[in-house]
Length: 287
Ligand code: SAM
Image (tube, rainbow, N blue to C red; front, side):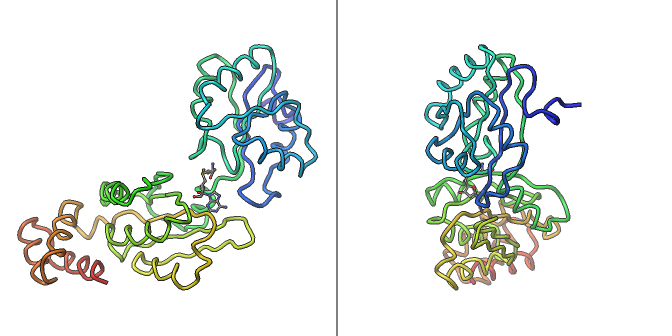
């Protein structure tokens, strides 16, 4: 049996990768609490932020060490030294699971190469929480985290995913989320479904599923909706439509210059894609 099921710590010095709540403090697991209380060092993305979490549970960390995106390599060296001296270390980030669109992966890799045990203390993760309520029955999913911040790069990244068959999971910042769903509607077609999961586990949690064509208006309907934290899950491509990314690109270019019917006719002739499907995509795009 895994030793840490009965005691929070292994007998050998180890790195524990501990998930913390996304917003609701009661999502910190009893094992996470015990581990944070028992380790010699808590390595945290933002020590001031994590101190508040520890205080809320009456946990007095023996030592707090900062591990963020800018010092991860250097901090890894320090943590390996702690482990070499027989100390146990827990890694936490500001919210959710470390190393998932958060610092931690480089540290984990270095610690493992150095020969120490790395063990997860699982818990909240925004992507998994959103997937658990998405009702994606068919196929799998792919996690992409944050898209590029600049519009042109974001659209390019989305174009590369037009033929993706699995559901796609993204994180997005509040000031970009509306522009992002509008781009998604243009690139993927308005008929694809999106799940918008906002402020999961928090007071203003909202989870809505809709065709992409309606997503921009969903944000416009209530100005508060662009506040908070977001996971976006877009259904994968419907392979039965028979329209691939190249055909959609040609259609898009023609639609920018020509009337809808002409653009559809030419796109069908150029690409060989079915005219009916192209027509449906063109209508969604114009809407
Ligand atoms: N490591 C975290 C995890 O396990 O989900 C993710 C950290 S990443 C820096 C932060 C992003 O995760 C946010 O911008 C948002 O996209 C998503 N996120 C975090 N908390 C969330 C919540 N309560 N509701 C919706 N999305 C959330």
